[in-house]
Image (cartoon, rainbow, N blue to C red):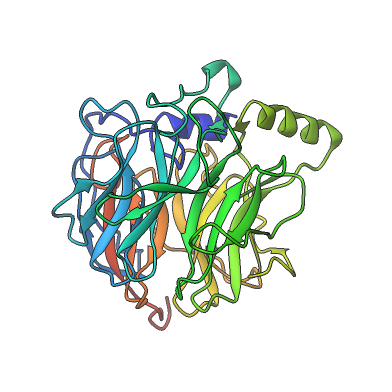
Length: 362
């Protein structure tokens, strides 16, 4: 699709590998319109980062990136100021979607390494702009230094044998449940499980693309991105692409539900692509990334909306791409990925202090 196709050439997306930086003018770290953010810091400078998420104690960040002669993204952990970055995956396959478990001694991430040491090839350009949802992804659990990595879902990974797509794992604040996306039942749905991969429960039940789930701070609700076919033709195209391990993400909206999947409801009706939701510290709103405000569909900013679908507010005004927001567990800081202070295709990790209450008159 033209909207996301243009974006693909300039930024890293959830399942895209790191891009090569291009020359261009530097931009400001902070726009004066960004009244929710103060003390904005850029903690990386190499570019090619995606999905940077806090440890529970706020002292470290896990993310995916590609370095040097790597053929695909791997998982990295760094200190909260960007120092001491180190790879924690094994360098094989392709990795995505890292998250710290409760206590920060262990991590979760998805990898195709068990299927084959070589990463899967990107989709052919003839498909238009699509995201791969490879059935060779499994969710791994490891120590925070990357040691003792083992698959938890599926439990057994056999080289050369595909199972289903298992990725996008996030963890509740109390550490008792993990959300993830899978095609195990023939469609992309949201599931929850215990951190050891047991007690798997399906939470969504509608044909279409459900992904990127997160818990509210108190664990009572979940939010995710979704697109559901509205016609027989759309349904047919969606299922045809999924059979080839692909989705077309040019239209997505934000949904919320109770943590058991009941009472699902759509809270954005913006058009374009809205994704990467994360609950605000008070649990009353969701921050997410969207391109709905840009006629060309090239520019992604962070927005915030109340759980009843009211009060839409633009949070960032930076560069071409602001995405993957996550609040620290204490609610004081926001981490996200952006190319605001560098050339196009140079996506780095940024941290800011969060202003929970806007000044009067703003």
